[in-house]
Length: 393
Image 1 (spheres, rainbow, N blue to C red):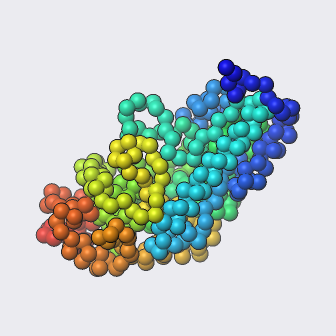
Image 2 (image 1 turned 90 degrees about the vertical axis):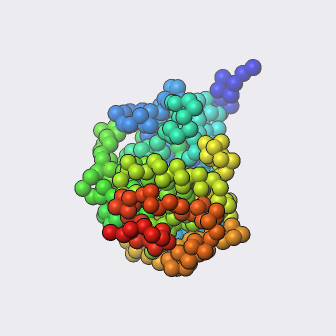
């Protein structure tokens, strides 16, 4: 039986120039805002996740593009007005981006070029079979995007597109077709001014290394720089919804949990384990989620968006950045009601809500044994009265 790639192409071959031109306009016709092209040459010397041949033997080029999210739904999400609207928009936009990639891959195959669409998220390498915590993407859409001119790296390491900032879904198509690469965007035009809105929006302290500690990657002879992250476990701990209360106690993500966030990375493991077990027993958040095979295999639950704040507060307009950060910080603290619904309340109301829970329910939202944690190592233990008799410093 013939495979799709062994069958003769139904379309007449196009020149490199004509095929490149069509590939650049194709995603835009379906809703993408910007498109970039990289090749094995322009990606040479980059990190392992820029190796196109990992996903397609004989790959020569990749097409990466951005599909924008709905900004109104993003603002309502940041202000803790509506989680479900943004969740549905994020999920739908992701599916649209994947669909565009699948359409483009089919288009290129019909010209006789082996091609594969790489989904925008939730697909990982199997370099360590059986290790569900080892999650490395097949290729990095972010690296391909900055090298191909889709956007710049911001301080946070998010890709900032000229019109929508990082509020986009990135996806790539890897092909054996030889295409003409696009240039990176000029660094002088990068709107990121290290304003620290992303840092101020992250409860986990993921970016706390700050302006003085940055990492540079070289891809195809071009340098790209962003902040040097702390443990990725920090981002996973908060962004997965396992906890969400900012250490100040004044605001939260959409997660109703308030497990403490350690000051040092080495203290992450024990509290993350307890928070994960609690998360898997809490009522699922209303409004749907994303279909993550790894998470579902562990818990039979989907992944619901509760954070992503560093991405959503960022915008090309500095005044809009300030407005979005204020929405987040002034939106209150999320609690989960008896019926599973979520509600944004004041920090004081949130403390009273949790304190009034029966013990067997309360342990699903906060630690039951704060005396087992050194308050010097968990800053929120020094600020939050709901932890009872913990000795403050």
